[in-house]
Length: 265
Ligand SMILES: Nc1ncnc2c1ncn2[C@@H]1O[C@H](COP(=O)(O)OP(=O)(O)OP(=O)(O)O)[C@@H](O)[C@H]1O
Image 1: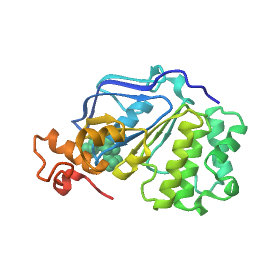
Image 2: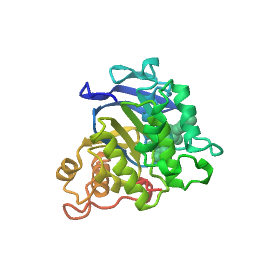
Image 3: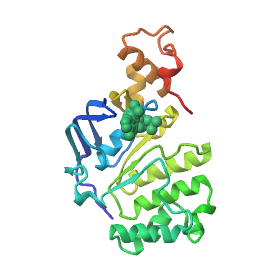
Image 4: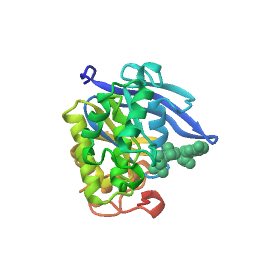
């Protein structure tokens, strides 16, 4: 099992990414500290997936640097050290949980006991021989997560892992993320456009239109904005960034129009 060594798992400096002829990330800088659950929150289209792709090294970058666990993002040495779960399922529906994970372990060159450890980590031992196609949505999400865990990664990058799940499954997954960070010392970068998931993160990065509006803990964010919850705080920051004063009383910033709130849930 890996040991914590550095203070920053990810360091992004002046990252510029152009997609479809547009500056999706115009010049982003941020750090993700080791051993924490960092939430990457913000409206759809804000650049969360693009940033994650740059961190795992699958995104063409126009300029800037992305350093992951002390190496340049996408370096061959990071292959097993970084686990990535995309929004679309990456496991085979016609194979059992165990066979899926055995396949990923082989691809990554991970030891065979990594399969059982990953299955236990995500609490799927009782379904290890079930076909993935017969599992519930929440169980399937956990298989994808287990596939990312077989390489025993120090950094897990999870793109909207709780989307479409019911509140109980969401809570269970967030409990698991926290355990992976706080008990096993891994670093987790987890994206979501559901603001109430902010309460489960050690730190929050609020991303909107390719720019970081805030990088802090939730208590710091609430203190700084005077807002009662993460969603209101985010909206207050959006108003400030667009030079618009909130219309409501302090602590209750006005709600911007639907497209600005970007809520697609
Ligand atoms: N393959 C692509 N080609 C061109 N533009 C793209 C491509 N993929 C994404 N974009 C654009 O890049 C911007 C950021 O998209 P991205 O997927 O990173 O946002 P996001 O915050 O992850 O959104 P979501 O929550 O919907 O996944 C969007 O404006 C999107 O239209």
